[in-house]
Image (tube, rainbow, N blue to C red; front, side, top):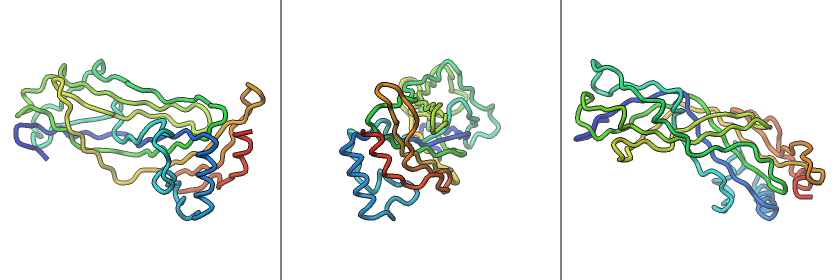
Length: 218
């Protein structure tokens, strides 16, 4: 994995992929029509790839990687060298996605979780040149206390000496959770979740209940 004039660091730990959409009434109805035309396209909640959701519906575009607060790392091809240190103060959150419970909105979240591993390429020729003060990590966080009850952090970028470095992540399979839901209100008072679809690790918890669109967009 090591390239010329770079040094490769192997990283592993808990990891996630995350994407989130917010649909208005027209987009939600279009999604329903797409489902009716070919329900098989919605197997495993693959809504975004099969229905052409508009880019302006994106709350958070697809992010995939390791949780920066739950990682271990070592030098690749330099096994006899001490493991690199990552300073906690150089790990910075740049975005937080959390409960908003927006009125008249259909939300779709896909959250995948498991073990993720991979490599980053640092612009140094040997681990002895590594300076932990020069390594910076940014990440996004999702924290849903409501219906999804899902929490996690994902590295969004890594830089060394102000140069963004390459990240190559992979896994041996992640649990895929899908949530398609809205919110029932009485005036301005939130009452309950209107869950149209929910699945966990290929198991359907709530099959499609499209009639709840009338509750969400009343």
